[in-house]
Length: 521
Image 1 (cartoon, one colour):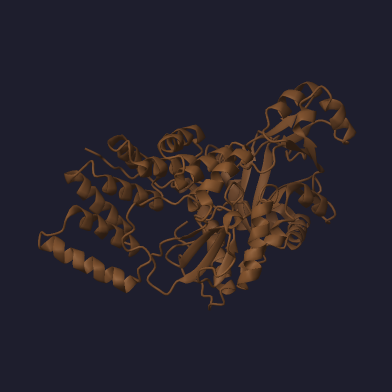
Image 2 (tube, helix red, strand yellow):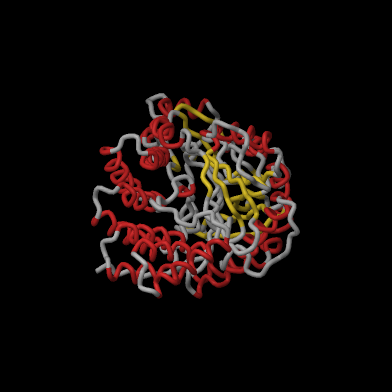
């Protein structure tokens, strides 16, 4: 018998599943006004009390509970159904969908796997399991599942969307485009369920088909917003769009999302609604473009960045080409469009250059001057601050012995002293980084011109900002469970509140600071 345990929620800093929605097979109640949902729930409860409810009606009941934001009840109800009918595909699939939406990723994967094992010919279970695996970075496992579906149904839209996302994440963007053409053409607009009790804010969310979107899982609460997702690069008709009060352009990577940003700009012009992150402003935030703009700012040191052919750097002529571009070792090489340290390497000699370049995907590689962010203790420090509605908020400080610093790979969990340093930054950013760095951050904010963005930076010996990255793609993940992370919760909650207040202001609604808005951090 299937046993479902719900461990602490795990937050994943990707947002791919907004483009490849879980397939519920039967969407009973989705989009129904709350009063109608409550009425339908009462009717099913009467059938159950009378002993006349079949298993589909009982599954419908769980879906209605979910829409009413009674998700724990919905989960328990589905588990009870599966106790009597453990192989029921619809119950398994709906439970997987529900657990995934609640953040119980491991449990959802387990349930989807059971659905796949029990019903190997049903594509829905394969796709939903693959979507979660893709979201967690298990590309090959996800690809195997998508390909299993495509071997039987080559034109299956969700499987083509999924395999396109796998190829995009691996750097094969031309291959991804061929599958996206099948998966998204004519299917670029999706309305997501709304689970709130008050009148929702109608939000139009613009995304790109591939990589480069802002992760918004922690930003857009489906108890506040009725969200319609538009895959901009495959949106053929600019008007009429579904009803919306505000547009959130979540296409954030200017290095790889130019077609999507151009189409998003056209959608924004045709709509006339207020927009968060004007696509035209985003187009100016590519890494090389940003470095050139930011290098002119006071109190900011931005690295020189040049785009070069990957094949040239990987050839015998690579060292001389690098020298001709004006770079000296150490130097950084990066494939455009990748984040979280993927396809990003440090090169310290001619001997290292050719194999390093050869291992990077894509025809072009970014050559980046190395900025040394090590302190007197030999550790590298990378600060992250978020820009929300014109204000700057501290998000975290990561301390690591390695040059490539990310919060999730740094030794923050094991080192209480580093956590204390992080906590001091969150409590009083101006005091910790100093007035020169604050002036530099403000100049970067002004130059970006974005409503929502992040700045990754270090500090030099003079207190100036060492700019690593500044764009819209950065994620705000709630801290993991555990007392050791309690010091971060208020700061994260403050940012999530600020995002919601900004959206409400843009939607011309009266903005109130609501305790707990955006969910518990």
